[in-house]
Length: 234
Image (cartoon, rainbow, N blue to C red; front, side, top):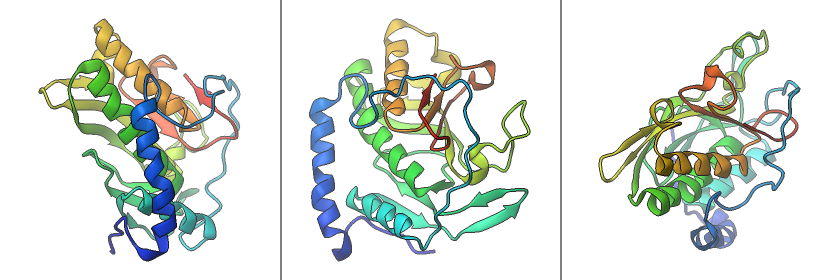
């Protein structure tokens, strides 16, 4: 399977445009990273079901998204479109290999999800760890991406069933500290500030962000997805 690297002739102009992203975020990051919708905290109590992505690996939208990944110098592998039965699909997906921060358990992700996750890791989590906790981020721990399953307590397919969601469980710092959602969500003041800050940063990027404040099913992770028709952050 070919590995796409972040500098090719056909992405030159996207690279020039993307170079401003890191510079802007480095100076603008305070509590929530750069980019996103200012209405991200708006609640969506009756979240409509989202159809699986309508574009595939050969669509113009997919090519545009992978061009953006290349401009960010992200290493990734493109994945073929697949249908697994029961409505579970992997369409328009990639596997992230290097986003600038080592990350565990990343499987198939829709390209838009992969792009948003990359921005969150680089410009949300890493600077927040440095500024709030005083240490460099050396690893992000996730619980995975694609999984053919329904939403807990519902017969409706999860966004994980469309490779359109990722669950983040913890972070490792250069000073040896390991911070987990399960163990530290209600930890000391500094760690609480870090975790709430990176959640707010996620709310500016992903369409849905669910934390332990949402319900008991999310006691040990932050859930991010690109489904639905609006913004929901809790």
